Image (cartoon, rainbow, N blue to C red; front, side):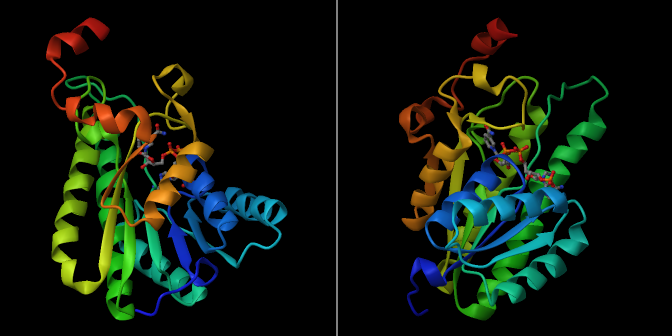
Length: 254
Ligand SMILES: NC(=O)c1ccc[n+]([C@@H]2O[C@H](COP(=O)([O-])OP(=O)(O)OC[C@H]3O[C@@H](n4cnc5c(N)ncnc54)[C@H](OP(=O)(O)O)[C@@H]3O)[C@@H](O)[C@H]2O)c1
């Protein structure tokens, strides 16, 4: 592929109407990328686009596409329409996701199914469409927003942890599969980022703003790292502990 400057590069972000996705859109705009933004709430997405244009008057083109990743069969057509509107995409950030507490044996199967549907099936459908596009273009970069929760079983978060572990493993497999195709995979494991995904997020340890997380994430994307942890400090250093926290520690916290 011919190397491009940021001004020429186009990034597509799912779940760009709020939280980390929204902050990523602002950060990429500040760095001169063309944007393709998706979410279910078009009116919110339009406000995000208008705010980006106000904050960054020199922002490159911003295309919007309504996308519900739960409508699995529509994910491909919607994304391909967006890729075409942008004149091709270079980076796809698979960010759309949900979380809510689910307790085993408490009749939470619908909630558990919804989490798996959005965070696993929706994410896989997004990666599939992006890779299809990159294969025709001769390369590209997939960025998967997983979670530190992919590394550790957490009480009351069974479906969420399982969904992120599944998505992480899918990304790892895709990386090996696509090795010779000039398609790179960047897997991001956020810790606690201040968004609306969960109430009382400010009470969690080492929580950072979505803007700070976005700055770190975009820098990791530009370095094309395989695995990134955000915020880097202290989670990168604490990462080996995840998966080994004894059950009695969790029992004390419940
Ligand atoms: N915040 C954290 O501490 C944290 C930690 C680790 C990992 N993460 C991961 O980071 C990602 C973003 O989370 P966030 O904290 O920014 O959450 P958020 O503030 O709740 O934003 C979630 C975004 O996903 C979109 N979305 C949800 N369901 C969707 C669907 N079915 N189809 C399309 N878009 C959908 C939402 O847009 P619409 O409602 O408009 O569709 C919204 O833009 C998620 O994958 C999450 O698991 C977050």
